[in-house]
Image 1 (cartoon, one colour):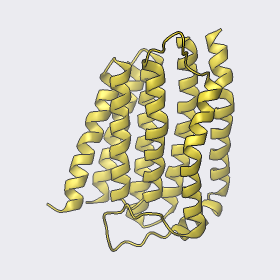
Image 2 (spheres, helix red, strand yellow):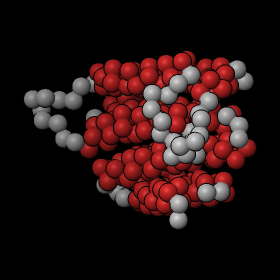
Image 3 (cartoon, one colour):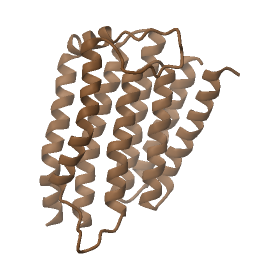
Image 4 (cartoon, helix red, strand yellow):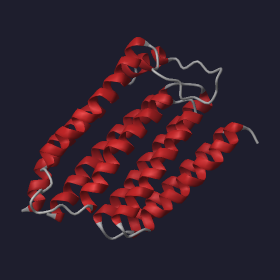
Length: 165
Length: 84
């Protein structure tokens, strides 16, 4: 069994077990942990498929979105130190994730990855071609995707306040 | 590993997500199911990209991940708002 097959077997097992646990476990913290395991194993699978940028995006989302969201929903805050509101949380998440996003964009712009996460040592990942496709054929989709995320970030505090009432 | 193995994994992941989003009764559970379906779609795109040796699938997967993130943001806001 090669390294790739072994890694795929482990990651696929964790991925399926985690997804089943995520939809069956009733405890929110358990479901969040299972979803985190699923997304991290998907990151490994993307690395196996020689897609390091997608792997990095999924891992960043898993660590900087799923973990804080699960903690926010499950951890009990003392009355003297209440949780910050949605705007504060979104701002903190942006401050944390912005440098990582910047590294990703700089990688695409410069055509080099800061580290090689592919298990195929002979693979050369063509970041320039990736950037060309992103701003070429997929420019409209990429802008639409970025707009959807921006609108969601802006609408989330409004939706939370409306729901709280 | 063959591309088919990754595609099968994506299909299983999508089925689990669909099952969760249909069976679970609370909002958070359904959101997790939908999140899994988004992840399965992205995995299928990346596997197809690797199979056809084209980068289009990877870029499409990145867009799918972004839309999934937007869904998670709004869903989390609704759940957090109702918890208050």
